[in-house]
Image 1 (spheres, one colour):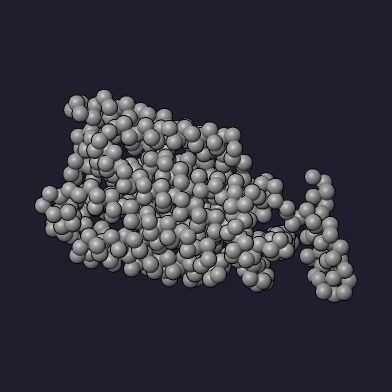
Image 2 (image 1 turned 90 degrees about the vertical axis):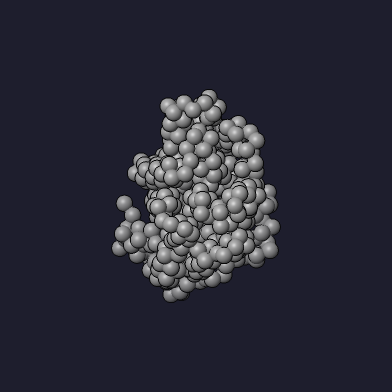
Amino acid sequence: MANFLMLVVAVVTAMGGFTYGFDSGIVATTLGHNTFKLYMFGPSRKNPALSGAIVSVYNAGQALGGLSVGYIADKFSRKYTISFAGFLAIVAGILQAAAVSPVMLIIGRLVGGIACGQLLSVVPVYIAEAAPPKQRGFLVGLQGMLIAIGFGLANWVGYACSYATGNAQWRIPLAMQIPVPVFLTIAALFVPFSPRWLVQKDRHEEARIVLLRLHKTRDTFLADQELIQIGEQIKLEREQGNTSWGIALKKMFSRQYIRRTMTAAFIVTMGQLSGSSVIQNFQNIFYATVGYTGQTALLISGVYGMMGIFGQIFYLVVVADKWPRTRTLWTGSLALSTVIAICMALSATFGAGGNQDGARAAIAFIFIYSFCYAVFFNAMIWVVPSELFPFFLRTKGLAFAVFAKAVVAIVLSQITPIAIANVSWRFYSLFIATNFAAAVIYFFFLPETGGKSLEEIAEVFGDALASEHIGDIKITKRQEAENGEFNEMEFAVLDAQAKEKHAV
């Protein structure tokens, strides 16, 4: 079990996941309120293009927010970036709740998207850099848990407010986006800096204190061992000339790193191409195809959100750091492909026939889909990408992955209302194919990263590891020790590393 302080720090920063989950979930119920549709769309209460724009502009904001993190998080620290993103989310919530026109609402959704794009990029990086290797899957997975809770709560808030009168039905839920970002903005200022960011800034003693506190150990030997490993790896990256922003961006798409860049982008993007975002944002349309509308549809949305929370609990208790990362992803992809195929068959058979048993079965499999997605993907699509990159590319790589996800989400949010209107249940076939293809790619091409330190994962991809040069470092450090320039504990750590490396 993780150190209590590490757990608190992870939960506090993972509130960024709650912010994203609630903000992205609340739009689904908002679009289902007749008072909202009358206020924003006019007497017809229909405007598929504007509905798509409200959803897609949020994803456009995520793309912009994700791209900005690569610079901000490296320059000003991970924790200050989280706090700044929380502030933007507050501004976005105010704009949306007070919206007097579609333009004002869209601007609010854009700012909210920027905030959530930053949070999605930086929170898993921060937690991954602070967490002990053997607990990283659980701790980074807390972001997925908070995403699920945020989304589930958004559905219930939307349902509860359906009993309100007038525009309060949709203004109150949109205003509920504000409280958690207020907490996050303030609380993030009090969490420790990422130890790896501190080492990169040559604040080694601060990094050592953070490692001792977060990893729950009084064994200074182990803390010093990890600190030296981090320091030597960052030193090696500097010697290779990877500190320049221009060089780093070029290297992200170089032959050496392109596999990691595209793997991270693919995994995060599959969060969209799995079908989850389409079902979440447009679930009321899916329920309408099998005969459920109004408050009944909103109630079903609430139950759908709860299934995600149950699935995320299952992940944290049974899957996190216990199942291999690759097995989790490929089995999950096959499970989603199968469940969606069943949903498509049920919708095709009972969607227009008025058979209540068939309609209920279709809804049941959408619930099963929500549970399976939470078990296999809600956390894992953030855990693995946060592990793939060396320090100088970590925030930039996650930023690009979130950007790619957002671009795909924009496309899906624009075409989904049109596709459902024209091909109905046949639209499911897209996600059957994408999930099956992802299973093949994960099974054959994704290396296992679980249980390794972030520095050791670089070796899996063929990078030079600082510990490979430990023999040369030992000679230098011994000379420094003889001159009184190096502490004996550090030499002992290096000596132990060298023996371990030789034994392997």
